Image (tube, rainbow, N blue to C red; front, side, top):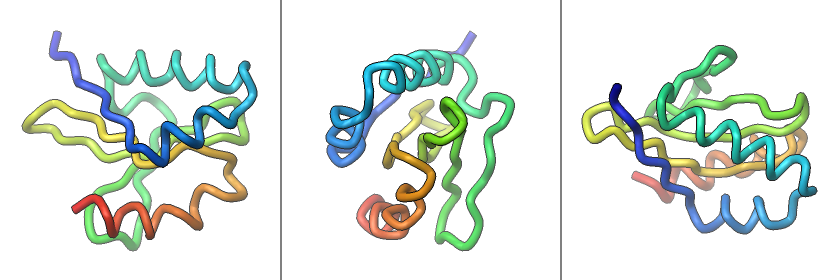
Length: 98
């Protein structure tokens, strides 16, 4: 089985620190599972961006926003947060990534 490496941007790490403990645990479980399957059931591709960006729900109201490097087997977590705020920052994050 091929394992993917998970990398997390500084802004995603900062956001993660400010989330409630139960949400952080749920995110950790989801990220661990993504090392084996980077596009688990429920993954959605975000449209209107220059490159492929995906999101996965965590605990109904939280999202992990990420890209997948299929060739080098890396999942780059761009941001993590509440659904009411996460999409505002994604354009800024994707502009800085590539």
